[in-house]
Length: 167
Ligand code: ATP
Image (cartoon, rainbow, N blue to C red; front, side, top):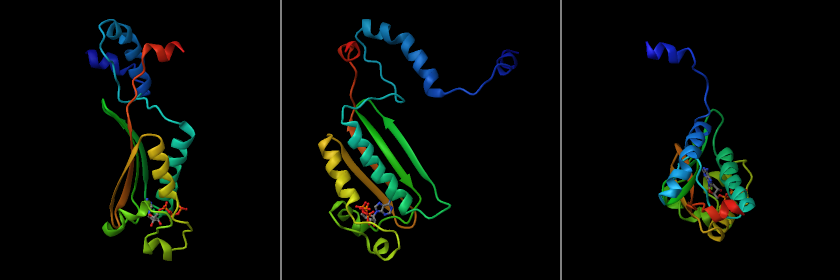
């Protein structure tokens, strides 16, 4: 059978590499027809890279600090046609509803984290907010006490034009 024949040639494939090959194969055709060809695994943003990395580090450092061992942290980057979202999800102690708005303030720390031995100045998220603003991004924070926290940084999506690639 066909499937039998295929299976004999199975291998581990990097999914985004495979999509890239297909993408490159049709890019010119799309461009000729003036159709914008997007793909969710290779989305671009227009921003200052060092500061964006620093911001993501703040989220990840927090996730590590406030997640007990045995938990997990999941990093992802998702795009739709308009925006690109970086997400840091953890299965940590969570943030009480009443504190959600305030954690972005300078020096603000949730009581439960103040009493813990986890050090911190309460500056991380205020710096992250500042960086987000400077890069035209916005932040979203969702959390459930004792379940976990998700921080999302949302950037406007940047589409490369032929001029960009010619540079
Ligand atoms: P640092 O300045 O070293 O990052 P910090 O973690 O106390 O110290 P922020 O990063 O500003 O400061 O975070 C503010 C507060 O928000 C923290 O004290 C903590 O209570 C809460 N918080 C932030 N991220 C998480 C998270 N992933 N899970 C649970 N609580 C969090």
